[in-house]
Image 1 (cartoon, rainbow, N blue to C red):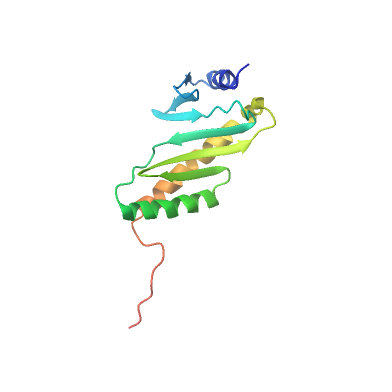
Image 2: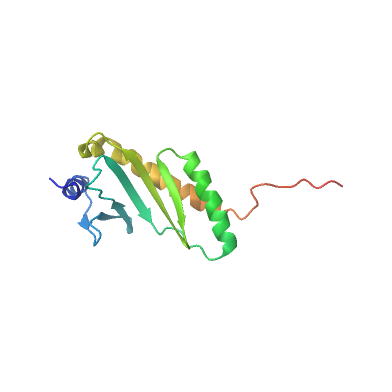
Length: 138
């Protein structure tokens, strides 16, 4: 069975409607937001769950803050990574599996880590206060 079919079958069993996108990855929705299980037939033991385009960057200053927030979140939350790509962001949960069938026991935890990373990134970005404060002397 092809890796994409394995992913689609798994997602159907979890109650998700999944389809192949034009790149051959498996796309599905959670609360109206697109998620992808990335298909790498050359390395079927590599699992990558992707949540793209969740924060749009509108300025150079915001880009700088986003880079710092992405680094902080990636260091803080196991398995999850946040990327700043141009004026957009994406987050993923990535790991190696012994076999593609090992997806079942880790999927929920990977999804929670991914969603937690996105939530934390958004919290940091919405907090307009400086991360470091200087103490003024009287």
